[in-house]
Amino acid sequence: MSQQERAARTQNALVRSAAELFERRGYEKASLNEISSGAGVSRGALHFHFDTKAEVADAVEAAAVRALRHAVESLPTQDGSALQGLMDLSHCLAGLLVRDAVVRAGFLLSCEAGERACIDLCQEWQTHVHGFVARAANEGSLAPEVSQEGLVNAVVAATVGLAVLSRSDKGWLTGRALTGFWKVLLQAVADPRTSAGLQPDGTRREGDDDRGRH
Amino acid sequence: MSQQERAARTQNALVRSAAELFERRGYEKASLNEISSGAGVSRGALHFHFDTKAEVADAVEAAAVRALRHAVESLPTQDGSALQGLMDLSHCLAGLLVRDAVVRAGFLLSCEAGERACIDLCQEWQTHVHGFVARAANEGSLAPEVSQEGLVNAVVAATVGLAVLSRSDKGWLTGRALTGFWKVLLQAVADPRTSAGLQPDGTRREGDDDRGRH
Image 1: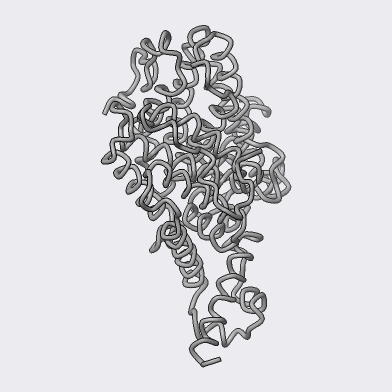
Image 2: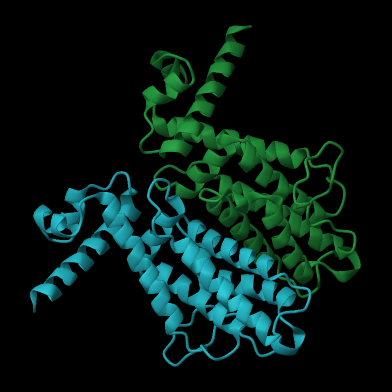
């Protein structure tokens, strides 16, 4: 393993250790000592990568932003219906929030950011939602009276709310809650000519778990 | 002023001081000394009311719950359409979040509650939303295919999301964002026979500010 690979691996371990600590004990209570020992590296190794806890938090949020971008790029419905793509992406984000401590911590840091907030995961999410809604409008798959801004706001607010509520009750991030949200919303926003083929529980792919089916 | 009135006044001042501190510096960083000095009372006077910071936080959340209950009881549309009542209440909650540091802090504490969480403002909000949606269904003012559970989840998730997003951008709590959300949602959930008379920007009363009109 090259020195560069070792450094990248250490940085990843530090980001993951910090994310788990931020989630368990909160950003304020987590110490640099706990972050480095959680990653199994020395305090000196931590300082090779980060000077302050705020820098570690920025790295956690940046890693969460990368995970979200990767999810967008990996969508199976890139060229299909934009409304379906948006629903698929929301299920994908919910799955990331359930499975990946870095994405969860990134979202919480983004919501709580008072003094920090150079990187903004919520803003990034909003930009993606906006892109899908604009595409859906261009495709003519929105009902004519739907306000694009209202739809973007409703989707962003609801998904951020689901992420926050899931901290005390994981049930909010099951496919069922999200599918229920989309079922309600689709009746309002999808043009009747295009809504028949849409799957509010996400496009099912080979090997998927059964999200949203229960 | 009786001793009892003085005690109640001191307790209110402590709750307000704590709410402002929790909001500005976060629950973890706020100290009991700062809370008492912010309220203009001695540390001994604080300890007459509260033993720990967690008890102060519970008092903040309880005060926010009372403010929410008072808002529900003061709704002008108690006997009118339940959907209109729910929209009015959501505008009322947004107004409380904008104006009242105790309600803001109560919501944040409720969302962040890991170890505390005896009182749950989010749960209280959900119960009110559920009550209005059940009444709307009984009145026959929901479109027949609407899932009550899906609608409750959508409204709770979106309002919690708006409250969280407003921490970094107050724009999320203006009447306009909320009105946009309701306009989108009403197209899906309101029975066409009843939707014509509904006001997604809230029932306007004499002396109201112009929320949602811009």
